[in-house]
Length: 482
Image 1 (tube, helix red, strand yellow):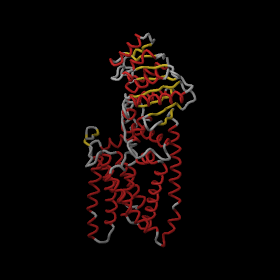
Image 2 (tube, one colour; image 1 turned 120 degrees about the horizontal axis):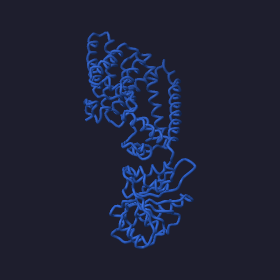
Image 3 (cartoon, helix red, strand yellow; image 1 turned 90 degrees about the vertical axis):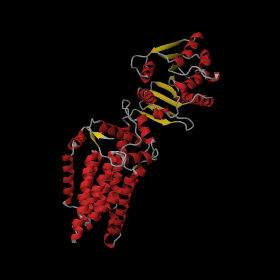
Image 4 (tube, helix red, strand yellow; image 1 turned 60 degrees about the horizontal axis):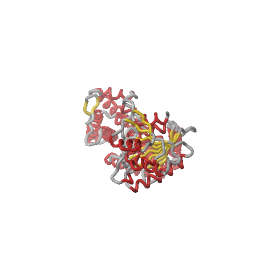
C-alpha cells in the first residue's frame, strides 16, 4: 500500500499509483474529446449526452489526484496542452479547473505538486541517478541493446548505481530510455519516428477538420507518453493495449485524411517530424556519451561458459590487477558486497578480473584457465589474487599449482580451508606455496586450518587486522595501497 505524508494513494487495480495515474489521465483526456464533440452538436439529445463524459472526466481527474502520482499529473497537463494545440476549445480550461480544484480539496494535494521541485527527495534523486546510469548504458549498447528484460536494471545496479545507494531496479523507469537500452537507439528512434508522424499528421488533421474526437485520442496518447517519461508504462498490458488501440484508430483516421486528393501534399511534409527525430536522437546520443565519460572505467564480459568479466580504469595510470572470484552463481547480479568490491577497486585504479566458480573439479579446471588468461592479459601489471568464499578457494589452488608465475601476492578472506576431497582442499596445498600471503583477520572458523597449516609448514604470512566497521572492499583496498 502506497502512501504520501500518511495519506493512502489510490492505485485502483494496478500494481502502483503511477500506473493508475496514467490510466486515469488517459480516461480524463479522452472524455474531454468526447465531451467537446457532443457539446458542439446541434442535436439537443447529443448535447445532453455530453453530461456523461463530463462526469467520467471529472471523476477520473479527482481519482487521479488521489493517486498522488506526479507523473500522472504531468501526463494530464501534457495531454491538455496537446488538446489545446490541436483543438483550441475553451472546454480545455474546464478540465484544467477541475484538476486544480481536486488538488485543493485533497489533503496534501498541493504539497504533492510542490514536492516535484524537491530534487533531494529520494524518489526524484534516485530517478535522476537511474536515468544518468541509463544514458551510460545506452552509450555502451546503442547499436543492438541489451535485450528488453531485467538485465537492463541489473546492468545499472552493477556498474552505474552509486555504491552508497541500496536500491534494485528491473528497468530504467523511463520508456524511451528502457527501449533504447533494450533494443538499441536505432530501434527506439524508429519507434519515435512513428510517434512523431502520428502526432504530426494528427495535428494537421485536427487543424483541418476541427474534430475534437481525434484531439482527445491524441491527448490521451500524449498523456501515455508523458507518464512513460517518469515510469515504465509499456510493460502494463492494459495501458499498452489501450494506447495501441487509440494509436491505430488515430492512424487510420489520419491515413484517410492524408490520402484524399486535397491532402496528398501532407506526404511531402514528412521531412519535418522525421528531421526533428533525427536531430533529437543525435543530441541524445551525444549526451549519453558525455554522461558515460563521467564514469572512470570500462568493462566487458569475458566468457559464456562461466560468469566472468574484466573492468579497468579509463585513465592512463593503472595501479595493478586484482583477480577475484565468488562462489555463488550470478552473485555479481545479486550480491552487493561483490559489486562494491569490484567497483571500489576499479574506481581506485585497479584492473579487475572477476569470475564465479563452485567447488567441484570442473570449476577448478575453469579457474586454472581463467587465472592463466587473466595473468597473461594483465601483464606487465603486478597481479594480486583475492581469495574469498568457495570461488576464492579454487583460485588459491590454481595459483599454487601454477607455481605463482606472474602473481605478486594472495589476500585470503574467508575461504573454506578443508574439503571432502583432498585434491580440492587448500590445506593440502599450503606447504607448496611460495607466494606472499596476507590474511584478513579476525578469521572465520573455516579459515583457521589453512592458517595453521601455513604456520606448521614454515610458510611466512602476514595479517591485516580489520578495523571496527571496516568493510571487506575497504580492507582489500588498504592492503593493496600499503
